[in-house]
Image (cartoon, rainbow, N blue to C red; front, top):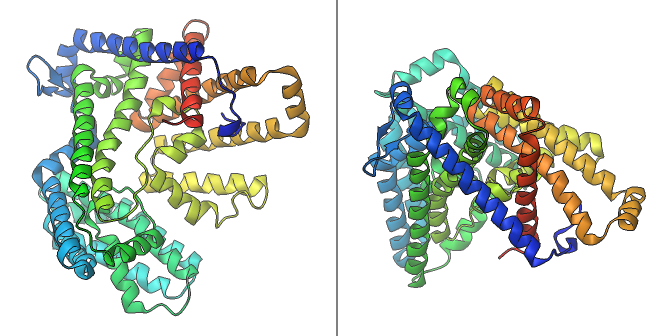
Length: 501
């Protein structure tokens, strides 16, 4: 964890930084190689149990066990990729010829695209939620708006209602698309409701309803985000609708961004062709017999695939939003240079982080009313994320681990910032040695961060087996070298954040 600001971090000799880079990069490659070997050695068993698919490259199988990647890849092939292209073309044409009609045109297009995929009944669910949120927001009672929106989100978990909605569709994947759409739109309804409650009372109801409709059905962000607040959306859309854009540089930007997205997609596909990490994590027997280096490779592969996956899933919508003159959240930062729980939340899904800060953390007091309010605000933010993701047992464990991690980091940061401890540190350590101590503490934080991510990505059983094998059975053989490599990762992360390229 970081106890000093970016500008105060002491530089280290370039040879030392180079050593950290070599060790970090080398440990990634070697652990991935060991996981690849294990995957190939057990390919027949994995294929029988998890039905590995024929790979895109001859001689390789493909692991389709990551539900989210398979789900969105299939939907992209069916329709989503084409409707996103249609959005981009419509946006570009209206920006050049009819800029004042761009927002209404994109709103209608987004509504029709959603109706074509979700059907009339599915879109009707969203319209009912929209209407209830809008109506309650007119009362300008924040607590009441929160209550109704939480109630609407809870309908996703009512069994009889789930069965009715499943009956609307021919496949389970269509029903899941409705669930994802309702969940993401729920965040938008909360954002609108609270902004309306906090805003001036002279805003016209019809105009606000129109903007809410546009905000809800903005097609690039509709199904999976990233999240942008209602206030930011209308400010940026109003500003962009007044501009007529015919800049040819747009096409250069689009070509470069699409090239990056294709590269990320290729990397994600490569990972699930050469390492069957998602199938392996689903079988406790394989987790128990993985060699130590392959076990570390599995942990790194799971979190790295998650990172690359969201570069793709957020990359294309963010590109289209940028062309619409919106300012989307930054894309996720590489997880291998994340060295704290707070950094992970701040930089992986920046849109969700800003949403939580604005609508939960700050209104509940945050850091303005002492440490107790800060801890409570943080805990409720994690509690909401757990509920929004489904509230399952493994999500509760994950949320509690993240809450404890953030509290521990904040506590240590406050301790080392105290005058007494600060004076001891300054007398005892040089600036460079102080940075090394920060990286050492961050290595322990990173270990717990990876463990919590494994619980989130694979379930409680994955985290339990990793904890047992690394910290209980391997406390003297596996844990020390793992922490040494995580120390190198942390040093690279500190260097990256203090001197970004």
